[in-house]
Image 1 (cartoon, rainbow, N blue to C red):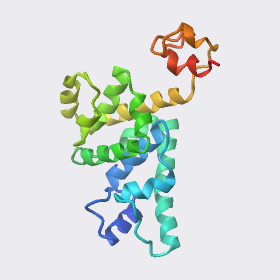
Image 2 (spheres, rainbow, N blue to C red):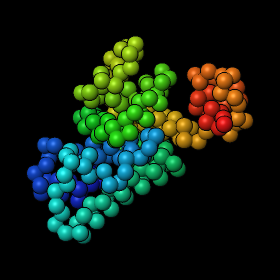
Image 3 (cartoon, rainbow, N blue to C red):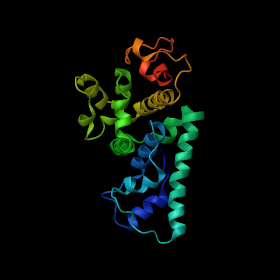
Image 4 (cartoon, rainbow, N blue to C red):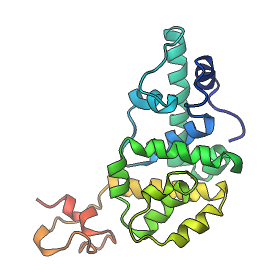
Length: 218
């Protein structure tokens, strides 16, 4: 990210003296990316409460200002969608925060997962998936609260030595993971009784049974 993509949003935050509690531009980017790539998006109606760091939204000067701020955020969300779907090689150049702003970006990402926290973290039950999300969360102060029981802390220590250069692969990996989760493999439905939910699916997709044909089983 070479310049702030949210001048109107940041001006609105400054006008109400919310700089201490609200997200900065890097955090907003992390928030919107997490909302897009995860199992479910954060509703647009909830964006400002997360971004401003409070339940109540301070009044806008007029409806034109409100529309301009929401359009600014929505335009960035659409850009995120376009790049992840069609030009993933640009994830780093467009969204990569400088190392000194990595913690802020990661904090925003955590807020983007919190609206659907159960879906996010209940779904990450494989080591490779956990490594991807940990590569982001370790840069926040609350990383330990998300670490599964028995998780190898070596990965945490190594990730903390990393830089923002690790983010593009992590967020792209998570995006592809959740895309697969949203689009079950079109195999033949099989009886639930015959297969354990965490066993490889017999259809040959390579997924766990619970994430594949179990969804189609009657």
